[in-house]
Length: 292
Image (cartoon, rainbow, N blue to C red):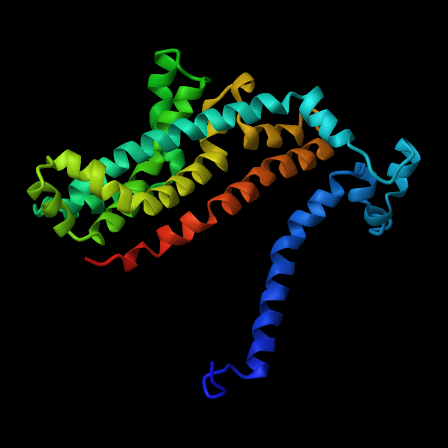
């Protein structure tokens, strides 16, 4: 790079300073929660002296060490947080699988359709997505109660797919539109049917977009509280409602440190997921660069 095109030193320092500050601000809440998950409540939420959260004075007095895994033991062993983790991944798996199956087929069909009603179908889907999720939940409650389906995992899967499908359809439709229709025509000339062209030609090109959409679908199901809290009973709770139950209610006493440890346990898989799929996510978000 020549000196004429090289960025000024002051601009470089500003950029690095901004990135550093942003990383500190973004990472601090999680790092502080991670640190506090190894303390007792009187240290981490100390009113008398906030430095107790750093030194672990009460934790040292109770457990003989400034760090303890009591919060994790209580959440995972005493309260059975592991079953909530399993339930969460079951729900996420089927939500993503169903959403992507319907979304890829529907998005491809709409992107290749020449009918005018295609636009209005997408508008209706967008309006449907803008509706508060609680309206869908209330609409499903009556048939779920009448058919004795309330409280089990398939109920939340059905509702989460219904909430997520318009977003999935819109996102995949936009990806398919950026793939030249010449690819379909070339595949047909070579003897492929429409579905074979979709399966063997379009999907391999679309794969980053599918992964990106699948990740967003996964996050919607993974982080959901309203739907799962209303539709699942205590035995089938997913992670987020289970964490909320650790805080207790006006009738039952909770344990805040169980909730703190569970929050850390629920957040770690998201970091791993994003780090593992970061290349596919970037490729999917820049899929508009595909040219014929």
